[in-house]
Image (cartoon, rainbow, N blue to C red; front, side, top):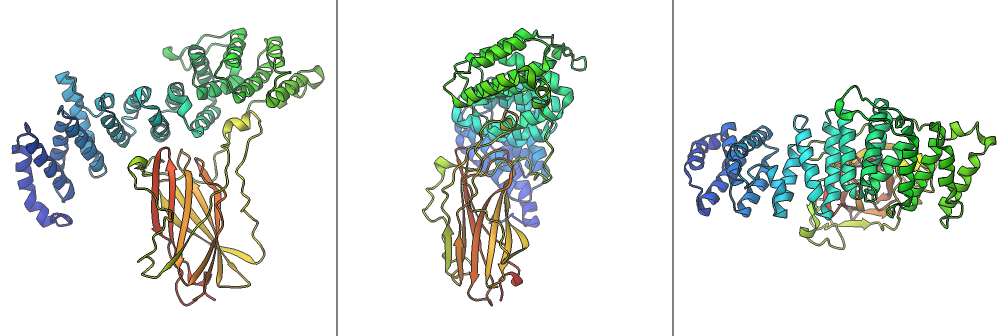
Length: 564
């Protein structure tokens, strides 16, 4: 531990010396830069004055002016580490360096935002991490604009993580729902193929709930899709087709959007609307799912628009002989529904989808650095995980432990909001291991065993009436983030006097915003009732290309739940 840490007196004695070193050291050589770097580390480590911390932040700002990429990388890395300690100083630094760049009109990239355009990918990635940490309600529009600009040129393997981060900060700090919708649509047009399904669902849900923005969103999506075909992003295509089906009647009338000149849209003839849907059907990018959405949209437009019914019927009839069973079935059923005898049912069958009701569970709010994202470790730099993740030696107060790793042999396909709107045969999570509680069990306690970075684990404890030494634990996994947690592995360890049997988890990954849908059962038998029941758990999962491994001690179980 540094001599100035947690010592106000020692820190006070060091303040003047550090200030002199920071102001008098020359930076024209690497030796001086090294001294200043160590000076900055010391300032941030001890209980230094706020003014000295701002001086240290400004030193890192000068490092960003350096042409040496190594020094600039060190500056960005250091700013990222200290952003939590003194956010106001970092914000001050960002404004200061922006002003320096404006006055100097230099091309070396003095600001954090300019570093997003640096040729060096490592500097761009570090600048992106820092930018993400700096986002707040006052700078959200400026920083998200820069992040979207970076999304255009970023490597394909980084686009998915960047999209999730943008959606997280937009959801938290959006100045208005309209700006939020516009930003999400822009992101879908740039990198929709890399967006997680939860981003599409969030966009659709937001549009559905805001009736005053139905016309704006539909007009914008229509024009964007028309301009980008045939190379449109598939996610943009799906959301646009859905909006046209739900709110296509807004397209055939002008949209003034509260008189804002930049968002005044002229009416679109019905034949142009149907022409765009026909172009989507013929697009080489259109999947079977895309075509299914278009067929349903055509049926909804038959109910919404006063014209174009014959053209819609002809487009639907094209798939009467399709080799795809899904498209063939939809085409035949929809054509039958258009018969006169079913005319009374058509408006009810294809009525406008109501807004989804918010979940009764309160969504967990995380700080800015998390913003719904777990703390991640780059997988390429992470050590190879051992076959047994739990090393129990010298754990659990020195007792030898038993660990269990349940196999993860279940798979599933994601379901999404669009699946509810366009009915299809969607696969649901198979939960073969979820059984109804038996009469011999009594659920009488819930404890939170783990709660970090958007992932929480709640243990529901039930004791066997036949044998009070046996405790059945159902672990429920809650993913409060906007991204799926893949390759999820949950392990537990107990002392040697506890017999443990762990069942497989109901799924090997946690979908975004899933609240206890994935579970895992554990049976514990305490062979020494006089001893406390301890448990050590370890979780491992992937967020995109990044591996996360966490290990925690579970809070002690109340005595009455495992004693005889």
